[in-house]
Every structure is written in C-alpha cells, then in structure tokens.
Amino acid sequence: MKETLLSNCERDFLLQAIAEKKRLDGRQTYDYRKMKITFGTDYGCCFVDLGKTRVMAQVSCELVAPKESRPNEGIMFFNIELSPMASPTFEQGRQSELSVKLNRQLERCLRNSKCIDTESLCVVSGEKVWKIRVDVHVLNHDGNLMDVASIAAITALCHFRRPDVSIQGDEVTVYSPEERDPIPLSIYHMPISVSFSFFQQGTYLLVDPCEREERVMDGLLMIAMNKHREICSIQSSGGIMLLKEQVMRCSKIASVKVSEITELLIKALENDKKARKEGGRCGFAESMPQERITALKFEETSVEMTDVAERASDVVQGAEAPPLMVPSPVVPVPGVGQVGLGLQNTWGLEEEDDDEEEEAEECANRGEEGEEKVTKMEVERHKKDASREGQFT
Image 1 (cartoon, rainbow, N blue to C red):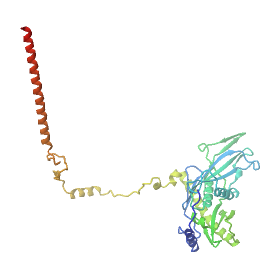
Image 2 (cartoon, rainbow, N blue to C red; image 1 turned 90 degrees about the vertical axis):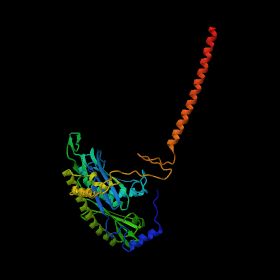
Image 3 (tube, rainbow, N blue to C red; image 1 turned 120 degrees about the horizontal axis):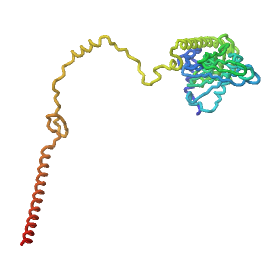
Image 4 (cartoon, rainbow, N blue to C red; image 1 turned 90 degrees about the horizontal axis):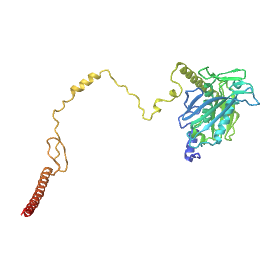
C-alpha cells in the first residue's frame, strides 16, 4: 500500500508553523516526546514508547559455530520487522527500503561501535560461541523509528541474561535458570541515536521529528553517541548539504539528550531489578494499565458507609405509609379489556349471553335428535312383534 500524500495546504501549514518555531504537539524545537520504558516477563524483552511510536525488542541466544575469521568472538545479529499493524504502508513478508536502512543503521550503532564484549560470548574457541539475536518489532509508527529502535535494542541487551555453561573435557553443559542464575552480558557503553530533521535547505532544525514532520523535511541527520560524548556513528540522508557548524551544533545537542535518556534507561533497569527481587509486579502485568485491559472500565467511586443505619431509618420514617387496598383501575372505553376480580367485562361484547344461547341451541338440537332415535326404535320393535305373531299363528 502506497503512502498517502500530503495536500499542498497541509504541507504549507506545517512549513509555516516550523518557520514560526511552533510544532503540532506543542513541543519546542529541541524537545523530545514523552518516553516510557517497560519490560516484559522474561529477561531481554523491552517496550519503548516515544509519544505514539511504540517498539518492542526481544533478545535471544543460541550456541553456534563461530566465524572462521573470528573464532574467539560471539555473533551479534539484528533484525527490524515492520508489520502492517504499525502502519498501513508497511507490507507483510517483504523487506522495504526503510527496513533495510534501519537495520544497517542499528548495526552501525550497536555492533560496529563494539558496545558489547563479543569475546566473553566464546564458549569453546573455534567450536561453540553464543549468537545473540535482537529482534525489534515496530508496533506503532509515528515517526523517529531509528531513535526508538536503538533505545529499545540497547535496553533489551542490558536487561538480557544468558544461561550459564560449564565445560568438562569435550562436553558442554548448559544450565537452566532453576539450576544456576543466568549471566548478564558484558556491555562497555550504551550508544543511543538522536535524529535531527532539517527544513528549507537547513534553515530550520527540529529534534525528534514526528511522522508528519518527516514527510515535509529536506534532510535527516542521525548521530549515535554514548554518555561519555563519544560519537559511535553518524549518518546524513536526504541529499542536503550541511555545514561544519551545523554538525557541531547537533552533536552538542545530542550529548545532552543522550545523557538524559541514559539516566532514564538506568533508572528503569534498577526499578525492574528491585521489583523482581522483592517479588512484586513486574513485566507484562505491570506494564499493562488496568484501564486498557477492558474497554468498559470505570473508576471506583468512594461511598460513605459510616451512618448508613441512621440514614435508612430517616428515609423509612419520612416515607408515606402504603395504602392497604390498591384499587384496580377501570377502563370505560369500549374495545379495551381488563382482567381482575370483581370487574365487569369491558370488551363491548356480551359473552355470557352468547354462551347461554349457544348452550340452549345445542341442548335443543340434542333433544330433537334423541326423539327421532326413540321413534325409529319403537317402529322397528312393532314390526318385530308383528312378524313373531304371524309365525305363531
């Protein structure tokens, strides 16, 4: 399905608002949208919400043979999936240009920056290493997918725990979480991507563009940086020419944003670790708000129950006494029937008289039929008697 194009009026409105330093959601030029980080029930499952953009990252591992060029290092694999649930423009089962672009940028941001110690993933040199797979699923698309994907991927890697192994000769034993505690990955630093969109050939700059702002932008600059202000990767797209001063300005803004996001990430990991240690609600049960499970959910209303007996007695005393006999209403209009004890029929028809007449007619008919039968029987009896007398004579 092709993307719906913006009308000229809407495009002009967006560009005019950006020129006046105004945004559709009320943010300032360098403001990020509200970010929320939650975790799933299993280790390595992470949900990141940036405004209306929502992404889920899941980390898994397996023992495989290493690469011939690097026999002592583990393998890192990243996969971004754009499902039609996130946007009607995404197609199922087909790799689009956007998915390939996001996948390559995520590999540059995390794998090429050496943020994870891949040598610690080696079990037996040249024979068995851990292969870490990071699957990023886009659940809702409202712009700036690269930043959300990088945050979700690095958070899921920090949250992930791989099984413990032991080696005895040529035998490799993998222990379950019940036998031995899983081991976290060795992470050196946490690179986070920050996106900048340029409008009108670099005249105006915005941080964290939404989906509609991405449609009207001229170019995009993505800077992946850690909290130590080390640039892990940088990439420009859109064919726009940027000056040295513009790139330096964006890098300074990115350093501030990365430090803020890193603090939020570390705090979310600490809260989840504390909740799991105390045995409290964590994972999916904690991340799903109660009012979203059912559509018809109402807030609880507090009710005062202290003086219920006094109020009930006041209501009973103040009420009027019920009547002893409830008179039945009489409907005098013809054609309307009513059933009740001691009431006359109001259908406008004399049913009882009709019934009596019908019964009298039936009795009369029965009497006539009976008399005819009696006379016939007497005639037959006389005939028989006459025949008998003739025989005897």
